[in-house]
Amino acid sequence: MTNEDYRAWVAAACPQEIRGRGLNYTGGSKNALPDPAFRRWFDACVERGFTVPEWPVEYGGAGLNTKQARALGDAMREVGAPLPLFGTGTTMLGSTLLEYGTDDQKARHLPRTARGEISWCQGYSEPGSGSDLAALATRAEDHGDYYLVNGSKIWTSGAHRSDWIFCLVRTDPEAPKQQGISFLLFALDQPGVTVRNFALIHGASEFCEAFFDDVKVPKTDLIGQPNDGWTIAKRLLQYERSSVAKGQFLPRGGSLADALKHYGTNEAARDNALKIDMDDAAFRLTRARAAEETKGGVGTFATSTFKLISSELESRRLDAMINIMGTRGLGWTGDGFADKELEATRKWLYNKGFMIAGGRSEIQRNVIAKRVLGLPD
Image 1 (cartoon, helix red, strand yellow):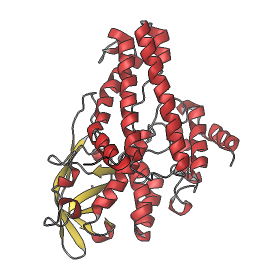
Image 2: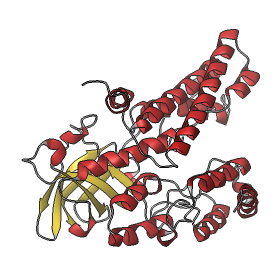
Image 3: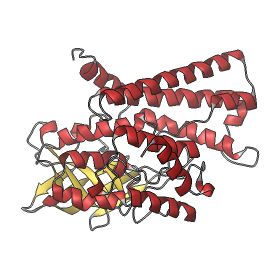
Image 4: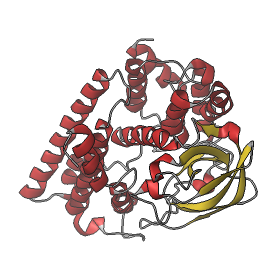
């Protein structure tokens, strides 16, 4: 298909009533489609493999190359079409399974994920192992053809609405901490799993705690080799940071030019807005060049650079937006504020977590120093 073909298909398949509304759908048994018209759009994309366009056709994708997938994404953005399916299953786990999973694991999990039949969450951080992820303590004891998992995870986004979790566990407590970790998949709707979610600063309840008490996990859902989960975990984090760098997770701020036009402000605010837009344009060009150089692959630790820049750039944008709005950017609720003003305040607060999520900025700088610039420890 040509670029024009993608535009024509999206224009014909995406109902007018869902365009430009910011709708999203993560799939799974616990998440309803956001609109009846969205169902038509979603079904059309599933049929063409466009929920995961770069996955192989046999696993529910369309087998597109990077250039074709970018043309499809551009076509969706041009008409305001929402992503048909979004979540950690499509942005992180799927790519990791394609690289490390067995044929059986890919056949069991990927098509169901592509069709939105199951949704996933990430079980990495623990109360005592956040930035030092390798210090995790959740144990998986070997019982022949299965593991028994005991422990807990925290900051587990969307666990209360997810069907399955991809989880780091310690399988050899005697080994050096990076060498005794394994990567497991298991269902959350089973005995021994307890999930609790809690409110965030912007008022929503996305993050969760997950507790595991003798959770039985068949070894058929061990990804890779026992005690080699750290290798897989690092690769998945590259996919995660690449997704954040593409803006797939960030709460994108509105147009600074529109805000300046609507609210009016001083010369310093205009200069700051212009600098942010220039930096954003430069970053998008750099990201496009890197995608061409790696043929669209994730490739290297340079994704930490992209994650760092994108999250801090968007933080600057939202800070500038609130500054331009003045007291109109401080509303939490009530008829005294327009819906867009309340939304801007909550996005600004929500974005603060993205300076931590996917690896806080200090961690990204350390990775860049060691792995990209080659500086000594």
